Length: 435
Image (cartoon, rainbow, N blue to C red; front, top):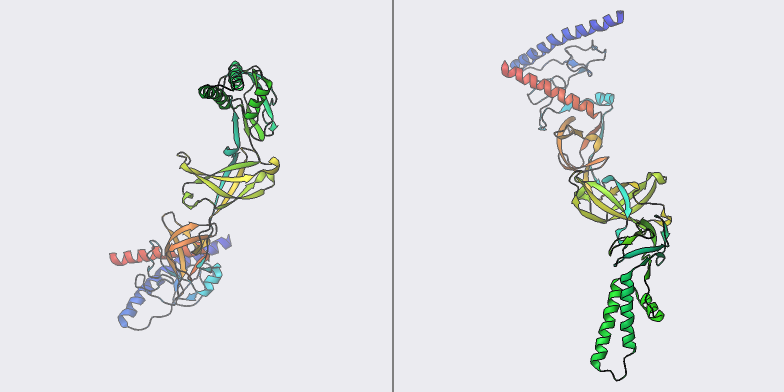
């Protein structure tokens, strides 16, 4: 209880002392201005600049030793008043330059960093999903109608080799067309030696038409040669896998009737895959084909793979406002599977830029502000215009110059002091105009 009473007593004394002294200070300054003589030295508390005294001593609020005020002129006169108010030459609304002694800078832990010209490489981070390589995807769909008779690969996901039998079909249309081909082929073989040129041309045209129909049904030269050797038409046809890979979809069932063009198998090659990454519209202007990206798969022990951007899709998703870019990667051992998720970091080298540390920038929502250490020891607020950003640096377009030093530590305290001094100076100016 005694301690609390003592603290309250000290605070009351400080308030009572601050008002008359501050008032006397103003009158003293006015009197000195009229007399043309030098002003008396005044002192203030480093932690409570509003407390001002004409004599040395201790601050009744916190007990700290009072320090002399270097310059003591009213706010708005172009010099410091109340200890640390400077003229608002920066043009930043609500903030003015402040002056901190070396002792006070050390007390609050203030540190400075130089604005330098260095290489800027921002990183765009996003997520991606593994997809099939569309150039290595095959769909098996007979070009004639019929029925599925036998399945040689009968489950989804089964690995297949190129040329491996998939299924056999029965088709009356196929049987009829093979008979037509055999008739035309025998007609050419049985032409007499003394046949006219017109007869030879007609027989050749008939054979070519029948052969062309078989070719359009994707019956290859080996099957046609086997038909000629066999000499009899077959009502069955064997379909083989056109690529090596895995069965992605199987619609064929033994006994199933199908129409011309109906898909029965989908086969995809998993040895080479695509990765679709989504980039926000704001980052899209920085993305170009050839930029290197680092792909991380968390569920594979954070396995990382480097891959360049190979294609940028031309459209933006109207709902998510994101665009899609494509990465490509080999898949030895088939460790990666379609629809897996991955983290992607796209590196964007922008060359040499003037950079300011991100820790030196205050984002107020309306503007970006930094405090620059001036040649006279003042910390001057500057409004910045920035370009590209990284986690550690901003590209400076306007506001500070290369070689200047900016506050990077205790920035919040400096900004608070600047706003407080601006508010006090504003009240003082308002009082003068009113008076």
